[in-house]
Amino acid sequence: LRHLLDAPELSLAIAFRSDVPVAAALLTREGPLPPPLAQAIWRGQRRPRGHLLPQSLSFHGGIREACQFTYQRVMRILVHPHCQQQGIGSQLLSWLQQESQQQGCDFLGTSFGASPELLDFWQNNGFDAVRIGLGTDGVSGLHAAMMLWPRSPKAQQVLPLWQSQFSANLDFYRRGMLRELPDDWWRHLRLLPPASATVRDSAIAHDFAFCHRDLLCDRPALVRFIQANTPLTPLSPRQQELLQALLTPGVLPAEVAQQQGLSGQKAATQQCRLLLRHFFPVPSET
Image 1 (cartoon, one colour):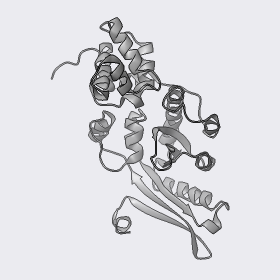
Image 2 (image 1 turned 180 degrees about the vertical axis):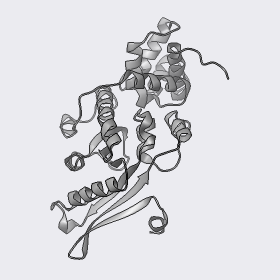
Image 3 (image 1 turned 180 degrees about the horizontal axis):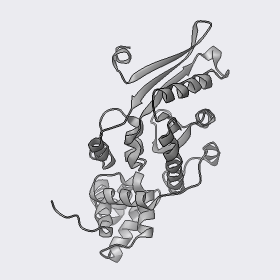
Image 4 (image 1 turned 90 degrees about the vertical axis):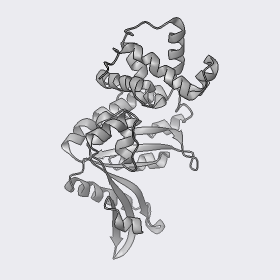
């Protein structure tokens, strides 16, 4: 309670019926982040506290500009058990959408355990999926979903691009890290047609190679990049085999390390960075 009262980024919205509280939503304001910090987050060099949506969309989702926007993230939304299935939660979200727009917020967003029922609830209330976590929650066993509702003109302009990239990445993950999800689950997820930007894939590949971006999250973009580009310095047959193994859907770096005689996951990831550097000019020393 003290944190709620003292933290300026937190807010609480309550819905009443005849002066009786029947629903509540807890929100936190996230972003924008200063450009130097945003770049460090994108490169995997910084992970400051808070700002879940912009940080995760930038680093895990490969959306470099995500840290430039402001978000109101719905952390919790609760409806009294005797008042559920009456549309009260949806009415509260509708009010929050209007309120966030009046406050000059770019996105109203949320992150939650992606059960089919919750996917339907949030999408029926106008939210669009932009990320699915590759791992599952230890308690619920669910993958996390991130969804956004655009509230500003610039947010409305970029969100379809983010959604299309997300769809393109899912085509890769469905053959690997997310292959255990049943077909029925996928029928509850509403997606735009897949599309990826060559410039975005190139930026991801470059900063994976020379910085500290995440291999598992970046693999779809890395695969698209190497399919569209030729290494500036040739790869040996063994290097080509290693790179192909590291970018295979569903194969973990630790498994590749064991097969290739490397010391472990970190060594395998570092080898992938070194191999990707063959596709770029050597950075000049300053």
